[in-house]
Image (cartoon, rainbow, N blue to C red; front, side, top):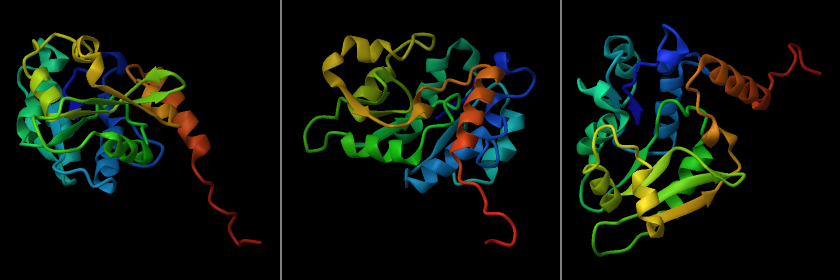
Length: 208
């Protein structure tokens, strides 16, 4: 998971600290969802706004990793996180904080779709697909994650799935949150409005 960018398009407030309609912040909601789906360990990469985000992470089970070179490129932040969690046979869920509306059902579907078995380090890139479009988060096999570690800090992550199409596993999901990139405040507000409409409403006081 990455929360290391400068958030220049969401104003003075980092996107990770924007209020999520399910309570708390965008970053807090991502960590809670990972906890509920039993992903472990959870690593949060901090960069531009580390001092502001640190208290948010400290009240969770997540481990913080400071990336002082965040300005060199987003993939550099991803690599910093990957180095903390790779071990033989592991798969890694990469969840950018600018997609905080993906559901726990999507996380479980990605985990279930990852190929298993013995043998060389797994080379898979498991991606959710909603209405024909690929989104986030994505699940990386250890072999794929090792390939990402060889990318330059400013090289886009999509270099891997484009150059290794045979490793891509598409998982259809009924989850518009995988496509909602909240790089701007307006995009976040649209996604939050959609999510609020989906949340169950409390019954009237006094009941019927």
